[in-house]
Image (cartoon, rainbow, N blue to C red; front, side, top):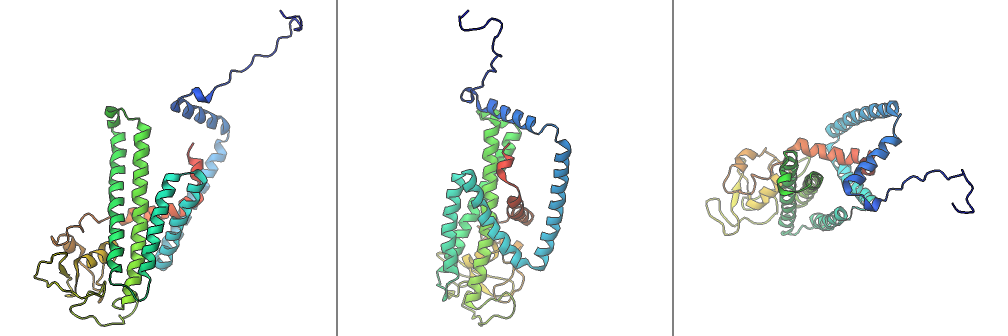
Length: 320
């Protein structure tokens, strides 16, 4: 015994400190969950009240949004599109999601340039093709990301990841992120394509959202791009063919495909007669149309979830 230590006055036992550097990822996750449980222990009634208030707010907000979309669809689309574009920027900067921020920045820069070209007057004859090519690429990529993400989630839920020695959390995270990218950029691309389509068609004068067209359409002019149609209906074109709708108006194949599928228009660009999408999809001359179908209910849910729910729920609070 040391001379300076008083007998019988031993210090309290020191609590063993846990070094987080020695913990595995699973152990650290379990430790965080245990701390969260201890922090909220005894608050069950308060949590129940919060859940009830949150559910009521969701129901009321859904009713308001549905009525808003029914009465003022154009303002609803513009406001929700702006929120979907801006709200993720705040969270990505706050939570340091640099991967999403880089993809968001690239998409925003190119789409802004496309939108700038589509709103110029006079409209260049190459602009409609440029617009539809870009948003067609976005749609195909988002479609692929969505399918891959969905398959990855099913792959994990069925336990197939164990055969490849992939952790369930890693494969599930990959599936959720891929599915989110597919839905998010798919909705953004479709909405921006619709805006560009309206601007370009209104500039050409063959189409008006409300009212009569300001220009008369000749038989050899495409109402989507305003350029002359060179290939006849019964001819095989080197680059593209000519397509005729049920209203007898003719268009460039790529133009009408972009108008109806990418631009979300289901009417003729000139006379507004409804387009038979089933006939167009089954037409062998439009091979790229068939995969370009998306469930509008999923699109509307994704729009609502990102625009409204994303602004009231902080993703940082959902990590734990």
